[in-house]
Length: 411
Image 1 (cartoon, rainbow, N blue to C red):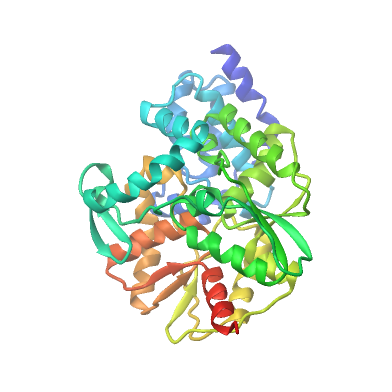
Image 2: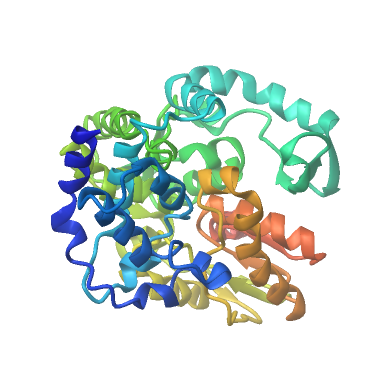
């Protein structure tokens, strides 16, 4: 125990930057729901301090409070003192995980997702078939599982084949002017393969050749959020080794959390950095290729901005949508987190869903028919909530519409 307390005290330099002003209360989606001090960043930091200062003897008691966090990063983004809350919580959870081991379901998920990506790809077609028989179709490709803890959820159908299986390899563009590395991430690989197909199609159209890894290795962030920091480091190292050896300048992503895991938090925990620039696909189209689209919609649409979208780019996302998609654009009053948080949704589904439901209610009340978001996790969460409230809206990525526009205009 003394060694663990010593490890927690190593966080003191980061912890002392917190002035306990409470600004984080206004930005924490869970605090807005619960109004509990232990929920918000300030309260969690105080608990960590109380352990290494000897005011709380049972350190394991604080793990459940640290675990009750979406890790959306809104407290960090809005902290006037610049406290690196994400870094503090991930490292503290890793220390406390040495005392309270991960439950068996968590170990099983990590073992398959992190260590057996080839096996996961092989069983994906079986999961696709299994969903048809083990779930009720509620809307197009959205199902509600019949049994188990998933029976409360409205989930997207799993792809017949993973994107990395059908599109892994090099996709050379005519009149090639550059090459990029496209990191699809697990959600696009298994749930939204059409996002990846759209990215290849659009980039090839503009003379960009695309390399897709033939085996999609998880970015590791699920392990980090469960306190398994060594597994996270392993996944970051393996991905960055693969990325760094490719001869290109850019890495394209369609998941802000994957980008955060590999290019922002990853280098802090591994001391290995990518030798390429990471770009979300939409910002790459704007800032590197400087291309525009003219998509016209005849229905109300809106935008959900993911929490992990790089802060300086969040305003650009709305601007991007307004410049490329014409129609009745509705700005939602609720600009909060969707509540997904990856493993948080697995661990605390009811709390996770409660955060997303308020946004879904606004979507329904304003008769919005389409929500655009560049994050697959947010897309899954909002799809679940929107179906639950009885809205007819769909949640999609703009890249799918850009690919359709280019295809329709081809001659």
